[in-house]
Amino acid sequence: MADGSDIAASRIRLVLSALQERMGAQVSTVGSVREEHSHGEALDASRMPEAVVFAESTEDVSAVLTLCHEHRVPVVAFGAGTSVEGHVTPPEHAISLDLSRMTAIVQFNPEDLDCRVQAGLTRQGLNAQIRDSGLFFPVDPGGEATLGGMCATRASGTAAVRYGTIKENVLGLTVVLATGEVIRTGGRVRKSSTGYDLTSLFIGSEGTLGVITEVQLRLYGLPESVAAAVCQFETVDAAVRTAVEVIQYGIPVARVELADEMQMEACIRYSHLDELRALPTLFFEFAGGPGAVREQVEATEAIAAENGGLGFAWADTPEERSRLWKARHDAYWAARALEPGALVISTDCIVPISKLAGLIEGVREDIAASGMRAAMVGHVGDGNFHTLILAEDSAEGRRRILDLDRKIVGRALAMGGSCSGEHGVGLGKQEFLETEHGAGALGVMRALRQTMDPRGILNPGKLLPEGEVYRG
Image 1 (cartoon, rainbow, N blue to C red):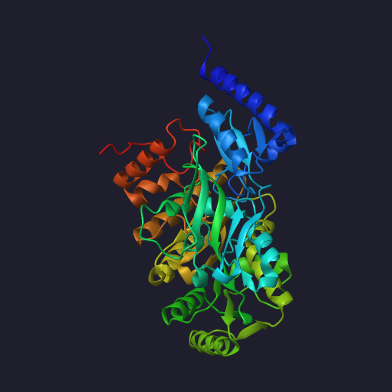
Image 2: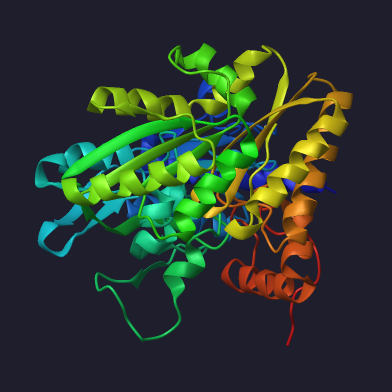
């Protein structure tokens, strides 16, 4: 009698044969291609898919899922591979479904400030194509993430304090369900009071309820004036207090980011920010009309001065602003460069902004007690920050990092926060979900998943820990 592995291998051979006949060179079993699709970034979970299928249309995705559903073959949707919690790591005998060739702008409606794009288009690619219209898409998670992947992981980023996360900026979706059926959710209107909010259901579902192939996005006018600056402080507490007060006073900053002294040391070395010192630092961006920007700057400078800020250093040109924000986006790689070969894991906690100072103070105590090096960087305007923990790349080093990570997450959850403000769950955060949501809510989530994907082919093993399904 054949064992389970033999049966799974037989099923995938049938599926690949049918897909190769239908899609030809879009199906790859080349080792180097499979290796590229065996993992994302940061989390070191890795497994080779049996094959990679490069979809070029919603119809391609539907064909793949129809076959995989029929033969019970797991499928993992893949965009740019920039996720950091193991979202795109395949299970055994799986297909990686790559949507990165789906890069068209399907519809552009500048008069209504919206557009519809295929899921493989990146934010950078979209903004490059629509720049001459005077519009842009603001959600900025940092890397070259695809817009479909941003939806799947409910991405956020540096501009969320002004423009919101991806969730607030998606009007509708085209989604292929596990059976291959294609549905559209939402629409182009800014509000609707009809039916369940299926768009929000798929945002953040990490490819476990369906594969997103098209996204209807809100767009915004390019601001008339943009100013960027950094302000350094003697202490992290003074920097955090400044950021919180700026938000509480209602100053509409476009971005406000924190880097502690260790992170600044790393950024100065890695991104050549030689004009700055290794001190706790806030990165600001202000946008709007010239008068409004001037008012924002004056109010923010006054708050910073009251908290001991050491003065604003301005980035006066677009090139200098880009350099500054690239340094912020490169923070993870800068931290890795501090100790080449070290293991680095990033936490991703978020709390209500009134709790942020207390959380960061407690986390710094935890870091000191651990004896490990760790840098802090984050979107403090919305209460989200990351601790980049470094340790020897060994089983013992991993254990020590995860122990510290659990302490940090525990602090955040005790303050009414979340284990992830933007990275998602994937493989890396499942152990915290019952504490955060409760067993009952997780049971409902499992029931939804079982209903949407009864054969369990969509990104199995991700997002939800094993447990009881809500039965009513």
